[in-house]
Image (cartoon, rainbow, N blue to C red):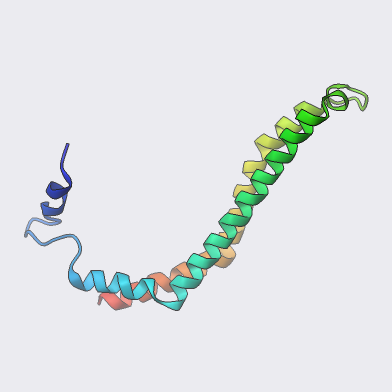
Length: 125
């Protein structure tokens, strides 16, 4: 297994240049301080926090419902087995969150990511 020092000294190309030059490092720093990058990071964090809260809230609600009210849930008075429906909901919820993420990312995150990528490409030239 290679040590961290061995990784740093490994050349990126046959001519022996390093993988990241000081110009690239400055480009990364400038990019990280840009308004577009800050907005992208902020939107991404807000979205992820909201989705995590939604998922954990629904999961906690289902667990609490199944724990604190076992009698009505395990009866089949309505003609369906409620715990089975809730378990199916837990399986479907990540798929719903993924679809929401794809739509949100396509509409709100991807355009900003393209701006950030274009800024970075321009700064490296």
